[in-house]
Image 1 (cartoon, helix red, strand yellow):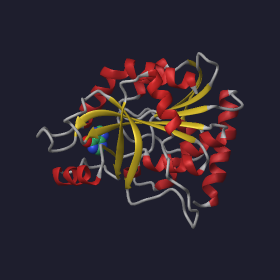
Image 2: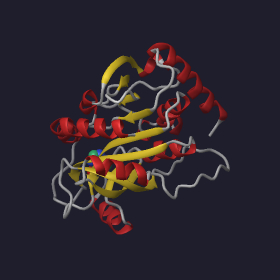
Image 3: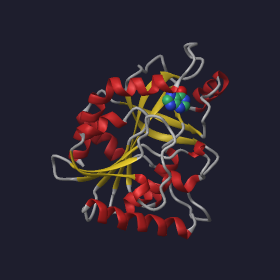
Image 4: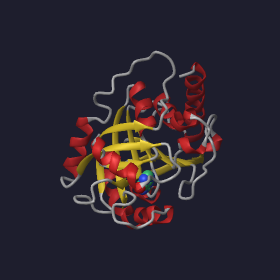
Length: 267
Ligand code: HPA
């Protein structure tokens, strides 16, 4: 990565401290498509700001992504930074804005990053729409990487086993799966979905993997959770649309919020 990206994240962290009055944060949560309504259950809001109040953030481009950042205190006294939306690679601004939130959070003290997303389910035989699935590993087919230069980061355990176990203490019914990311913004073709099943994927989406890599580079532990909003293209013959993705999120927000709140309290 260019040095500038780190400097910009450090500057954003300083502005964040000033604007929220919180000196250091413990955990960051990135709320993906459909997850924003779940944020209300995570804790007491200390303050909320627009991403554009901080250096380096792009204004939101996607319906259902509000572009706000909320500082929250959880029941157990943890300070959480909640990103109500994210920048995606398909917005065409390059990889640095995509990972700027995670880098800013780490510069603001965060040691745990919770990445949520909406995903197509590649295993409708065993997955239900509306089900949260813990990400056990990923396949990065975005064609990009947030790290520039010969910095060889180990990705043997991107998604912390410890955090997955902790999440399963909260909800023993949580399944695990491999998340595959394409750049988007098109949904996949049925042929691509068949390919991803063969490759060992269980979930498909357009986010998370680049942020997870940036979090590991920064030394944070990562928990990834996908909300299955639809079976992958062609698996049931129905066309996909973004509104359906948001609707599944609204319908499951209460459960997802309780799950995230309990997990954060256990960190
Ligand atoms: N593919 C890619 N991204 C998605 C999907 C999908 O089927 N569902 C929700 N986000």
